Amino acid sequence: MIGTAGWIVIAAAILTAIFCLARARAVDGKLTYRLEAPNWDFNQSWASNIAGIGSILGIVFGASNILLSAGIVAGPTALGLSIFFGALIVLGPFTYSALSSPNTVGLQAGEAPPLEGTVWAFVVASGLTLWAALGEAFTAGALFWDLHSQLPIGFVVLFLVVDLLGLLLLIRYAWNGIGWIVEYQANPPSPPP
Image 1 (cartoon, rainbow, N blue to C red):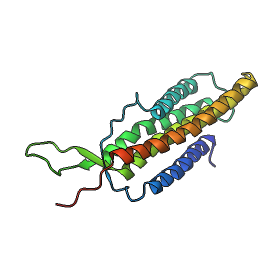
Image 2: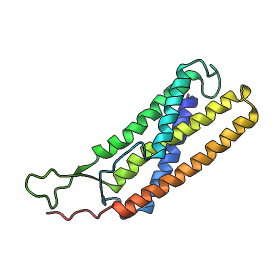
Image 3: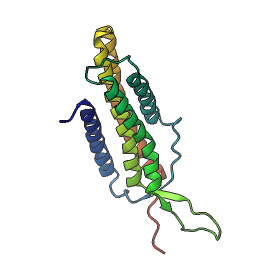
Image 4: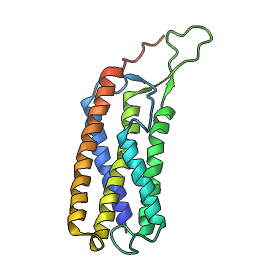
């Protein structure tokens, strides 16, 4: 039987898969285009920051006695989800790097070839970060719902509305961000030598 944590992971994964398939379809014809290795700077990506902060807070709350032992997301469940989604944040850039290859076209003798990935690898790696951010947002919503008996209901409802709005903005940001990078940084594959 799948527990609450499983359903949160699955729901975030399904939403992310639908997003990535739709985004890949929107850039169809450019999936094999090459991208230079992007600078994955956690200071510049608010999707990574949201997921990272949520992961840290979930670990702190999950490891403490602040959360109820029963509810949608009990303390140990929040801890496990936060560790899982935190690992996904780190896995995104590593995935892109692992799927990259050196570009040896036009190199001078002795030059180190730059690493390049493909648009499809970038969409997959971005999807891992999006999965983490969505999962953390779902977990945060469940945590606040669990605390509704300890907090004013207006505060809980306000947080849930802000959480939902944040989810919608996150999805729009990811859609546009991937599109802009593909549009302005992707290059057709190099012809074989």
